[in-house]
Each structure stands twice: as C-alpha cells, then as structure tokens.
Length: 110
Length: 116
Image (cartoon, rainbow over all chains, first blue to last red; front, side, top):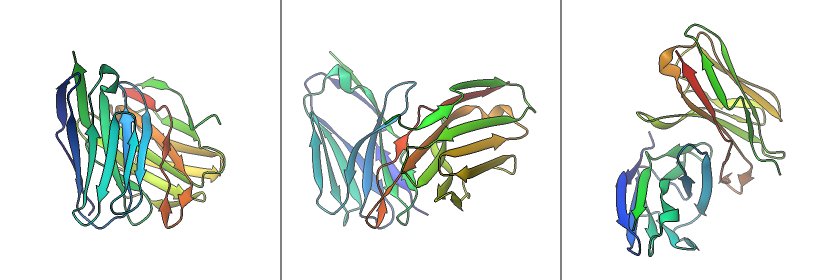
C-alpha cells in the first residue's frame, strides 16, 4: 500500500525566513504533485514533478523530486503572509489515482 | 474554462436521509475522482472513473455510498442512508492523462455536508 508522509504537519514561520517541507513516499513513483489549500477553499495545483531530479519554481516556492530517495521537498524562501495555507503532496498510485499526504499547515507571521 | 463544477456547495440533512452530490468535470478530462476531507482522516480517495467506467472503489467506506458516471460530463455520489459520521467536505476532481500517467487533478470547490 502506497503511503505518503509529510513533515512537519504544522509550521509556524516568521516573515522573511526560509523553510523546507518534506514529503516521503513508500513505493516507486516518478510523479509527484504539490497542492495548496486555503482555509475553507478547494485544492489548487502548484507543481507537477515528472522525473528524478525535477525542480520547479514559482515565486518563493521551489519543489524538487528525488525518486531514488522517494523524497520531495517544497522550499519556501523569504516567507510572506500570503503563503499561509495548507500544502499537500500527492503521489500517483500505479499511474492512476493520487494518494495524498496529510498536509502541512503553514502559518506566516510578522 | 469553467473548471470542475460541484453542487450543492453546502448540504445540511438529517440522519437517515438520502444525499446526492453532483459533479461536472472539465470538458475533455477523461478521469474523475471523488474525495472526502475531514480533520481526522485528511483527504481520502473514495472512487475514480476512467472514461466513465469505475476503476477503483476500494475507498468507498460502506455500501451506503454509491457513485455513478452516466456520461463524460456528469457524475453523482450518493449516500443512503446518511449518518452524522459522513459529515465532511466532498471534492470532485478531474484530469486528463499525460504520457504514462495522470496529469494534475483539477479540483472542484467541494460540497460541505453536515448530517445532524
């Protein structure tokens, strides 16, 4: 059974600081997805990582994938309040459905 | 592009009543997914369809839950009879495949179900 684990589950950051969210998964997969969810809202796709070594960046967020280590990271640079949200990683199961981690709730304060 | 459309957005019902949630996927997307989100259990996949055919319903919690996709533009998730523990946000998502696997799933706004 594919398992996806994120850590930390809760993260309180100061504006301007850097931090990394980790996503580990239990079986071989070459595709990993990151989503963002604001409170009371739906999930918004952030990144799709399709191969080992893939790196994608959007603004202050950068995601990377190491399929050999079964690890993806979401790095936050110089956090701002607008980044406060819950971030989910997800891995596809046998090329079909996605299995989601429990999410990391990020709170950025001044 | 209107995105994934779900209705109703909010549903409050009494225990024992039948509840039907509806979803219209993005045009051209051939995979459709139903998820349930709760604080305790997170985001759970209930069932998904490829080309209107149910592929994996192992996440459907009980026989009280059923899902259909009669055509490429419509799906329903039905709970009969509903129970308080079914209270959750139910998301529908759709996707079209990249080579060798799914593209990112586009999520609908969700239906917040409360069963009293």
